[in-house]
Image 1: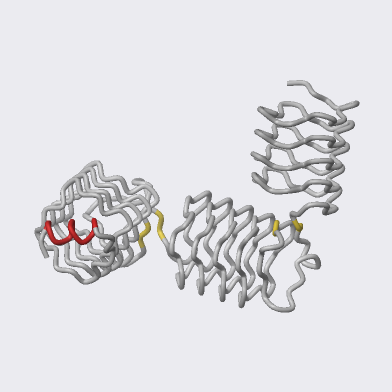
Image 2: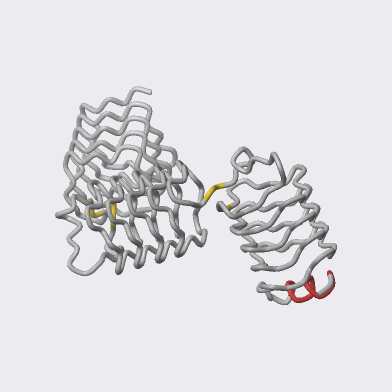
Length: 321
């Protein structure tokens, strides 16, 4: 397969070139975003400045390939062979690799911003939104505050993993093993947990909505989870540093709730009860606070940019900047 073949097929919508022989091919400056090159032979290929972001290069042969200034953000390099590859100014930020990935001598993928996908991996605040991590082994991994928005984790092993405050909005968690995992205060709105194993998992303070799918016979309320929906009652709940952008909490009872340092872009709090709530440092951009009860609330440092506040009751509230 030559340069013209792959460019032509890619431009027509083809993305799967698994197992293709592309050795010594010149794909310099070509856009191959999200291409599938699973076990492809790219040895000695010229890939200078090539866009391989989110590409699947699992098991690919990249020996002696020139990847200078190439972009591999979010690409999967699991099992790939990059020994003797040229990685001068290569963008490997958020690239995935595992223990079987071979890099050039003295090359440190962690310093380059790549993520090791393996048991007990340190992935604190990792940006893994939309990534395919299905069937991976991340048992014991630290995923505290990780961004796993719409990430495919189907069938993954997350036993004993730390997912505290992780963003799992819309994530596919079907058949995931979360035995003994800590998901406290994680955001599971819109997530699918059908068939997930939750034995001894810590689920206190997790956020979910009416579209979240839990395993059969699982009771999120008994587990200490918080339903995010119009009219809910969450007095004195700790929701600090939460991201509830775009959600509808109209007419909810949020009295004395801790929402400090939260991100609430476009949130609806129409006629909500926020009496004595802690709203310090909250970003309320374009929020709907009409007729909300904010009496005696702590609103210090909150940003109400372009928010609707007509009819809101701020009597006794602390509005200092």
